[in-house]
Image 1 (cartoon, helix red, strand yellow):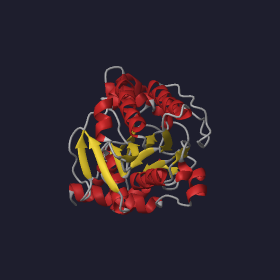
Image 2 (tube, helix red, strand yellow; image 1 turned 180 degrees about the vertical axis):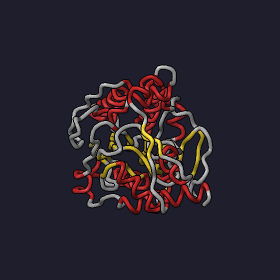
Image 3 (spheres, helix red, strand yellow; image 1 turned 90 degrees about the vertical axis):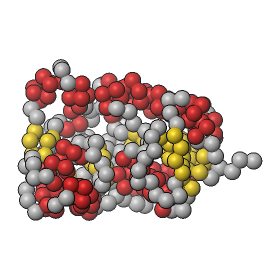
Image 4 (cartoon, one colour; image 1 turned 45 degrees about the vertical axis):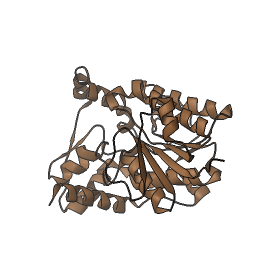
Length: 314
C-alpha cells in the first residue's frame, strides 16, 4: 500500500518557496515541482521538474502526496490563456493521487465590492477578463469537490509583499524604489484602505489548510497584517529607511492611453479598480477557527525593507 506522506508544492515562486520553508520547518516531507530548479529551498526539500500543463507529468511528480498545494502562476499578460491549463494539471494530479488539494487564489473573482469588506460568502461577480478567469477556475474546483472527485481547501490572499517578493504592487515599484531613494510608483489612490498580504503569513495559512481537517471543503481568507491605507504603508517604509517616501501616481487617462499599446499596462489597468476604492479583506473566519492572526504590519514592513536593503546594499 502506498504511504501518503509527502506535501507536494506546485510552484517555486514567491509563495511556493515560503511554503516549502514553512512545511519543512515543521518536520514534514516536502517536494517542490517546477519547470526549472529554484534556488533557496531548505535542506532536505526534494525538487522535481515537471510541466504542470501536462496532466500525466503532473501526476507522476505528485506520486506519494498527502497534500498537493497549487501555488503556480502564469505570466501576467497571458494570465487568462495559461493559468487555467496549469490548474487543470494540478487538479488532475490531486484527483489521481487521492491527495488533498490546497489551492491559493487571489481576490479577482469577487469583482468590485463598492469598498465593502470582502468575506468568503461573497458571490463571484467578476467583470474583468482576469476576474472571470479566476471565477471560472474556482468553480471548476468546487464542481470537482461536489462530485466527489477531490478534496479541497481554498485559501485567498490579497496583494503580496515580503522578503523576496518583487513582482507585486509593493515590490520593485515601491520597496525597491524607496530603498534606492526614488519615488514609489503607484497605480491608484494611496489614501484608500487596502489589504496587503505578507507572504510568510500566506505560507503559514496554506500550511494550516493542508494540515487541519477543519479546513476541508471550504474557502478561507488568509490572515495578514492589519489593513491601513497605502499612504500609511509608505510612511512605515520611510520610518525604516529614515527618510520620507514620495509617491508618483499615474493618472487614469494616462494609464488607459498607455494600455492601448503596452500589454503589461493593459493587464494592470484592467484591475485598477482594486486601487480606486477601499479594498479590505475580512479574515475573521480563519482567525476564529484556527486562532491565529497575521504578522503586525510594522514588523512585516521592517523585514521586507531589510531584505531589499541587503539585496541592493546601503
